[in-house]
Image (cartoon, rainbow, N blue to C red; front, top):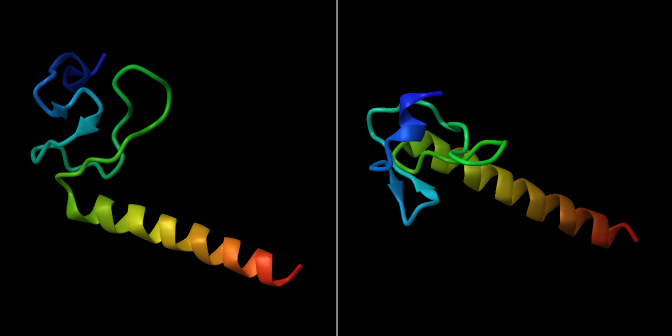
Amino acid sequence: MDNFKKNSSPWKLGFIYYNKDDKRLFPPKRTKMGWTINFANPWSIIAMLLVIISIILIGEYLTKTR
């Protein structure tokens, strides 16, 4: 098991991962399968915003084509 999963200090409120020493954009979740966002890395925040914008644009496109 990774050391970051054992160490609770980078986890804020138990579910927000904020670790400046961890360079990963999307580290694995602490308790469940999947990944979370490292909010200390500015590139991961940009990637998250791009995903959200893409979902909104695709949704808008699909509703206009009906």
